Length: 196
Ligand code: CA2
Image 1 (cartoon, helix red, strand yellow):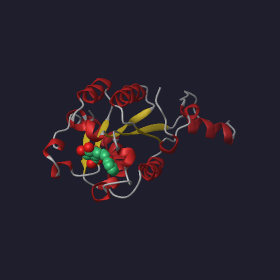
Image 2 (image 1 turned 45 degrees about the horizontal axis):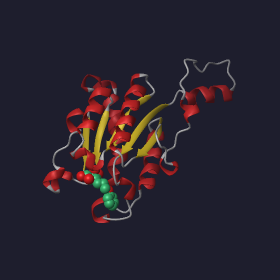
Image 3 (image 1 turned 30 degrees about the vertical axis):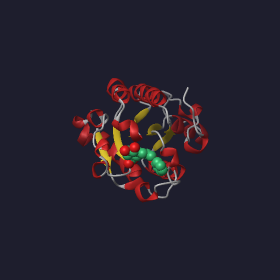
Image 4 (image 1 turned 135 degrees about the vertical axis):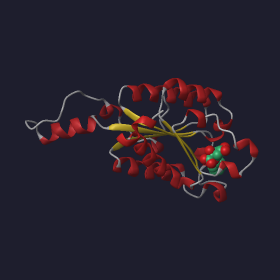
């Protein structure tokens, strides 16, 4: 089961259940509202190890906003795009792998648009995360706050880039809402042929 950190998640599972019912003219306003809410599509933002420390240290690299601030910004952008946000962070590789697998199933069922993933240092080490993204078919925008190519050589290789639909690097935490908008661009009809 995913460990949901209260400050960083914003989903009420019961409201995420999809229904095949359509809002129709004979319905009361509250019935219509319930169906519209329950049919809302989700977007996932996954954060890897040490990103829980955002805003605490190394502001010259990662800025001074906390991960909770980033979650708030993402929630606003997701709402503007008509999506419900599921924002998570874990320091554990296996937990991230399980979340990717779960997200792949949700995407297949039409409940999820895709995911923005900042896998932190696992980006540079984790074949398991590479395999999880490849195997799940999850639509991923890989994100990095810093320009990893302007840093140490060990940050130059990513195990995720080859299985990501897109990569966004070096815009600071402003990259998070940009990546969400990028996901929307990826699913726009004009780009359908380019989806991975
Ligand atoms: O630039 C990024 O977003 C990174 O994914 C961040 C990772 C790093 O290992 C990647 O190479 C690039 C590190 C996240 C650690 O974040 C901290 C934030 C504040 C204080 C300490 C660590």
